Length: 231
Image 1 (cartoon, one colour):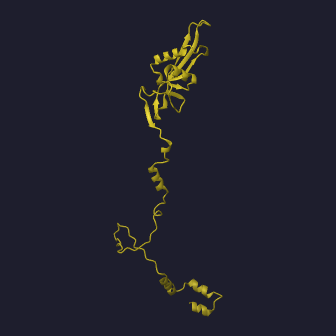
Image 2: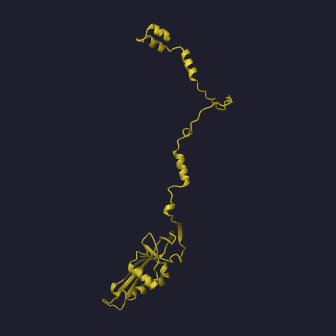
């Protein structure tokens, strides 16, 4: 218990002598613990309060003032106020006890097993270390604007595939070619498309390929006159 910083307060009835050593009426176990608790604004706070870990009075001796006597003795020794305590999993009897004797009724909702009451953050020594408040579910976005821009750039195809196609037009004044060794040669303008009629005319003027002559000579369906006319 010393290594865990826990303290056990025991209430003993010395008048009872079943074996000549008295009888234990009840006990109260307390200790300091580091906790993350929420305040009324749902902000996380890192604190180390004195915690009520266990509290028990024998059933045959309850409702005789022994519990209040033991609890009050602990408050004086530890020099704390009731609203500064954190209670670990309190029972309904303990909650009614604190409400009856110390007017502790309004609790601050928590996400752990500890219960704190209104006024817990009023006198914290040392001051509580506060973390950013919890954001509402509606305000949470899957990613920020910078992430969206990054994703937008990542899915685009690489250059030059991401550029829109455009027709190549020759410039009015083509740039001169550089003859220096230090400069890289520049490409000239693209040649315009040849008209269809001019292309057909050039094909007629071109002499037939030797392979085409061989095919015409071996064509069984054609006569020599047709071959001469074709040539």
